[in-house]
Length: 436
Image 1 (cartoon, rainbow, N blue to C red):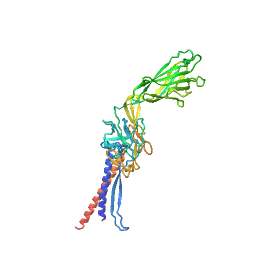
Image 2: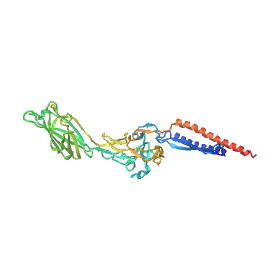
Image 3: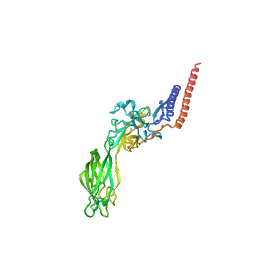
Image 4: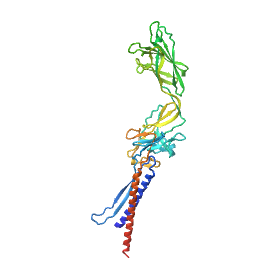
């Protein structure tokens, strides 16, 4: 009977609008929740087909379906914490719960993901949020490179651990030696006294050692030889001689004062292509640049002064950890009070073909589902993914003004459906009164 179908349609309308009210209230309640993805409610009509021209109509009613719009992004909000992270664009951060942290290794736990998080190291140095979400990343090798790992599984991921009392040193591997030798010292009648120079370098254990270098001029009987003997001693090997070289300088008008030839007497050979010496100190090899032949940047012989012009080196002594930051490529870099920086992790960006198909969990986290498709771990900024932003959080995707407007519409629709039920009740009452 049409009146009965009207009653059912009214009840379905009440239920559908109640569902819409629930989603609106959830959106408004989370308008200040970082990383919240709003839920939208759509109505779908039911049609009960009747024979054409039958003269009767049965109301089918309505059904509500809700959908979380995960691909919608909230605004980025600046913070003062370097480990407040968000994604500028598509993609999410890989995380896991602290409860399953002990069993995560080997990919035994399902991957969770979130678009933002305020991460802090706990007592064990594990980066996690107040809600217990642990940040995951690929550990870097000792030299700061990221190994080649699979991108379609979590087996290579591990919790990002930052130890506040961590110390580190950076051994010296390269030295650039820029020194000017006095041309007058190689002239006839010069005293021929050796000129000493000490250059500090840092060993593998952060120790400070020196390369003690002496430049001894060759004094001829007449004119000028423009020749020097350079000896290099390593303090870490009790002053052992690790290199001896004969240096001859050019005295022509075009290249006067630059190296003309380098002859290796002992130690690592001279490479004329890049102007380097291959030295071996106690802790391993060091490349010392003295300059290419004819190059004014390096060892020179000009005027009558002995002066280091530019001596630079890499490496640093042992330092204490001061800050940890995540750059736009997802690289986690530790900085020490000596100025040394070291890459320790890379945080990938997780992406799926259909973000709206992800399963929503507590604390603004998500998991893959058959509707979302399989995940893939991208380098931040590659493919369809955005970059990682530090000192920022993603705000809620809720538009309060729009939700309040929808609230008014829902209230009116609910009242109208209630009126339909009231009208049907009155009509049925009239029908029962016919008997009287």
